[in-house]
Image (tube, rainbow over all chains, first blue to last red; front, side, top):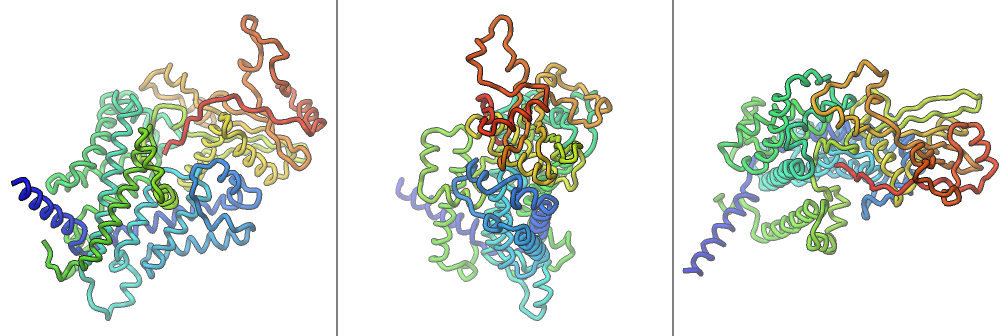
Length: 307
Length: 256
C-alpha cells in the first residue's frame, strides 16, 4: 500500500511538474512584459547620463578601486571597469542605451535581450552603492525574459517577418513565465515577512506615515493625512496584507483576478507615496506573467494564437 | 496533460528540470542567508558556484524591501559640500539637489550620499568613499579645499514629536533640512597631490566635560574647530599629518 502511494505520488508529481513547466503557452504576456521591462532598463541606463563622468569617469566619485575595496560583492564583472577615458565611457554608454531601446522595441530580441542583461548588470556591478530595489527586480525580470520568445509579438522583428508562419505556443514561453511567477511570488512573500520582522511601524499602522514624512521622496504632499490616523493605519495594514496574500493566493485561480486588480491600486498608490515609480511599475508589470494570453488578447484586441 | 508531441523530449526536460532545481536552490540560499542566517544557511553559501552565480546575476538579495524601518537608514540622505575656489569665492554643491530630475537619478545619488554617510562612520570601511567623492568634487570645480557635510536625519526629534504630526515644510528653504541635524562633517584639503579629509568631531564628542573629562594627553590631536583658515594652514604645513579616523560606529547596513 505504501509502495502504491509513493508510486502514485511520484507519477502525479512528475505529471504536475511537466504540466507546470513545459506545457506550451502563448508568449503574448512575455512580449508585453518585454516592452515594459525593456523600457525601464533603457530608462535605468539613460538615468546615468547626467552623472556618467562624475560617477564613473577618470577621478569620478566612484572609482573601481573603491567599489572593490568596499566589497559589497566578491564576484563582480563590468565592462565599464575597462574604460579609462571619458570618450570610451560615453561610447559604451550610448551603445548600452541603444541596446536596451532595441530590446524594448523588439529588434533581434534573442541578441538584444542578452546584451540588455549584460549592460544592466554592468552598471549594477560598476556602482553597487547606487542601486535600489528597482535594479534587483529589473535584473531577474531581464534574466527570465531571455529564456522565452519575448519578441514574437508586439515587436519590430515580428512586423518584418509577416510572411512567416503564425506564432505558436511554445514551452520556452511557459518556462520563462513560470520562472517570473515563482520569483515574483517569493519577492512578495519576503517583502511582507520583512516588514513584519524588523520594524514595529508595519505592525502598529504607522508605516505609511513614516513614508509620508520623507518629504523629498513623495511625489505629492500627503501630510494632510495627519488628521486621518485610521486611514493611514488601514493603508499600512493593506500594504502588508497584499504582499503576504500575493505570495500565497496568487496561485489560486479564483483569487488571482482580485489580487491582480488590487495590485493596480496597491502599486498605483505606492508609486506617488514612495517616489519609487520604476520599482512600482516593474512590480506591477511582473504581474502580467499571471495574466492569461486570451485575456491579454482581448485587452490588446489581438487575434489569439492557434493551439 | 499536454500531448507528448507538444512537449520537449525527455532528455531536454530532464536537463531543464535539473537546471531549475539548481537555480531555485541558489535563490533559496540568497533569500535565507542574507539576513540573520543560521549556521546551516551560512554554510550553504559556500556550496561551489552558488555565490558567483548569485552575485554575477544580481540575485544575491533577500528581497525584504521594507520601504521604511522608521530608522535613520531609510531617510533620504544628501551631501552638502562647500568648495573654496582658486579666486577666493566659495561654491556650494548638493548631491542630490532637492529636485533632481529624473527621479531615478535622484534615487541613485541619494543612495550614494547614504553610503557616504554610513561608510564615513564605519571604522572598517574608513573614509574610502567620502574621500573619493571629495577628491572628485575638488577636481570637478578646480577647488583647493572645502567642507563636506552629510547631515543625519534627526530621528530623535521625529520620535519625540510622535506619529501623525505634519512637519512644517514652509519653515525651511530645503525641506530636507527640517529633520537633519549634525552628521558627518569633514574638512577637505588637498595636501600635495593627495586629498585628505579631516573629520570635525561634534562638540559633545571632542570637548571634555567637567565631570568625565579624560586627560588631554589621552585624546588624539585634532585640528581645531571653527577657524577654518588656520586649520587649513596648519594642515598644509604638515603634509604628513594623517586624517582623523572616524569613531567606531555600527554601520546601518544597506537597505535594499
